[in-house]
Length: 308
Image 1: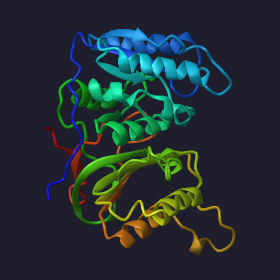
Image 2: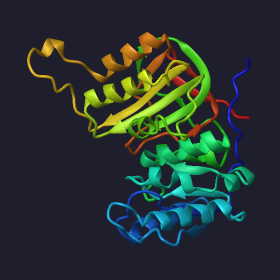
Image 3: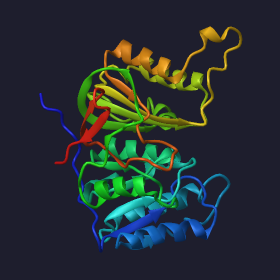
Image 4: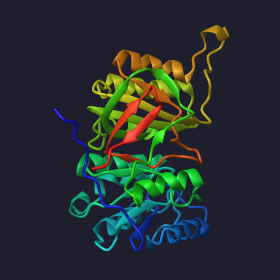
């Protein structure tokens, strides 16, 4: 049976209209918006900015109702060609059940961002079966590496990934499947909800930051115990930025590494796995089309995305 990917959305060339939203944590100030607008102008894009992106409320960019309003306004506006999230943080999970998925299905448009935005990617993929993009957030200036991948994904409609020269082989093999995942903390937090991504036949692409090794182990174990990993085709882990090493006391000969943890899961699942792809809380990162079909090859340390 052929592997089915999600419906690809159109590329967003010059003249496209992009909506900036802040569905999670608060921005620093207006400078974050100005950076996003400058980047959009460099692509030849027109822009619109969510009404409440600067309305800080505690550790949210705005109250739930206001963040919902901004997201739904962008989803329902047929003049908007793409939605680019300004930052991550925390807050997307609180608004998922109130988003207009019917509007997203009627007029599919790219949704871009990472970290907490992984919850939005998962929900859009589950409810609408459309490709969304694990990409740099809009408030962050793009490095040449990140910009090249972003342009290939969103503007040129080409493979934005490819060779991961700095990656490590955890378990050898080759796999083809639909890309799914994002930030591991967010993905694991969605287990048991209607918004958990479909991992059956998928290549799981994941990353995290500021997590102890035992917590990475715990989150993967949670997903395994829930039966969510049993149908995986492969794993491509990005970076675990500022993650603690093995914190166990005593004999260092018994210490564990991230590679040890990943090898255990990949071995149990009998699937290929690499670690260290350009994905995560790093400046140089791929823009990864979640929902698209890709091939993982550990011999060449590549993740190639098919274009439909």
